[in-house]
Length: 145
Image (cartoon, rainbow, N blue to C red; front, side):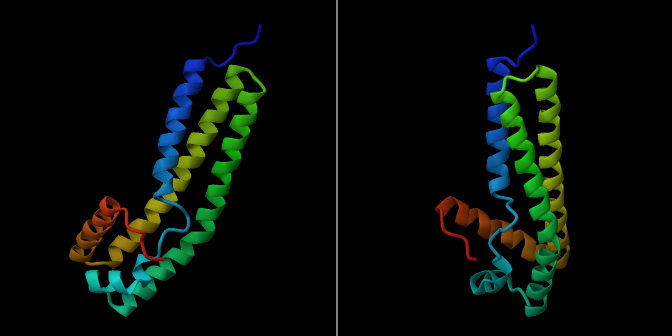
């Protein structure tokens, strides 16, 4: 008899996947371009040169982000196929590792882009950006695109 993944293991993976998906929803490959928003420019006192450089950083990261997001989606689809076909536990666990690894690479890439953006801003601008984003999150306001 081949070993199978238990209902508890699948439930745990589902919870972890949903949590990670929620985190990635805030770190998508096409986030709102706040640096081009007149509201954000005013709130943060962003200079035109800063806004231009922030856009360059975003555009440089975008192809990698899209590629990594596709890798995550492919790994998740393969995981789903394995679970649906009741594959052996070893194969499913190996695929879980691939999904986690693909997600980690995507998050790492996004974090690097964010770090580059942060270094372009003054500490005061960065702090203000966090405050403004938190205020919007609490209000549920649509972020500028």
